[in-house]
Image (tube, rainbow, N blue to C red; front, side):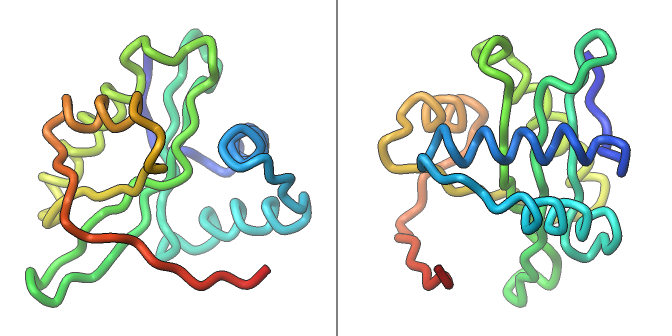
Amino acid sequence: MIIRKATPEDAAVIIDFQQKMAWETEQMTLIPETIIKGVNAVFADSSHGQYWVAEDNDNVVAALLITYEWSDWRNCNVWWFQSVYVLPEFRRTGIFTSMYKHIKNEADKDGIAGLRLYVETNNSRAQLTYEALGMKSLHYKMYEWMKE
């Protein structure tokens, strides 16, 4: 398995993964024009984030997005894992663990303060994975306002 930064050539598979994830987690159908523009915006402007992919036999089987949060408390960035998707047939095989460790190593080299993510409250399987990697559940609750 190879873990690497995604390239614009990976956009189609990342778009497909995002559509699958939205349906799987929220039974939401994404607007194709919007998700296409959103994924390509990351490749056009790295200040939006960076995609990473995992390949198995030259096929992308997982992808995730790292976005940035400036921490004035720490005077450096925190990286957020977002849009994590692993093809169903590759889940529970250690792919996310490998991606996490690779990205954590990159974060250490870049002087990043830490790694964060949010997870659905009922996704206990994912929560156990994150805890096994040394991540901790915090005392924060998440609130949001989103346009429909």
